[in-house]
Image 1 (cartoon, rainbow, N blue to C red):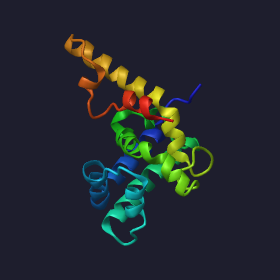
Image 2: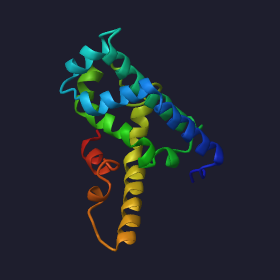
Image 3: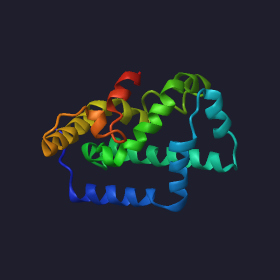
Image 4: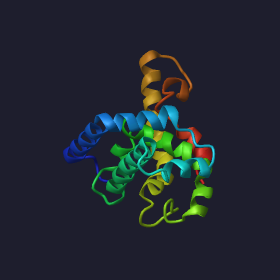
Amino acid sequence: MAKKPTVADAQLILQLYDLRRETEMRKARHWWHAEFFPQSADEFLRVSQAAGTQENNWLRQALGYWGMTTSFVLKGVLNEELFLEPAFSGEMFLMFAKLQPILKELRAWRPTSFPQSGRGGHAHQVWTRAPATFGQACRDDAAKESRATSQVRPMLAVLPDMCPGPFLRLTII
């Protein structure tokens, strides 16, 4: 049975959230979510290999942040259930949804950059373990919303920006 979240877990989540509020990190997150839509591994690699550009910095900053946070979960430093709350890690799933269609190409280019498992594949390990937990959190939130309004609504209509769970279940390898 998974350990229950502790006060230390909550404090770490708040510290990690605070890092996301830093000015340059906000720009990186905005770029990932509003401007960066790689359609092929070549498009991704063009940005990742353009050292010194702002886009390259943003790509590495956001990926590095989520790689670091998922390593905390996989090493037992941070409670997985708390980490996978949609309000905290929803944007990580959006990033994965953008990269998932080209992961096979990226792994062919450099297997150690996007491993399917093992050391270094922290984000992928959490992403592939998470849909059930993440989806359950979305369903729980949707049920609470439904009870609060006495209306039955589709989960994605209630939580359109926070619940990529069904989308991810369709796309995860």
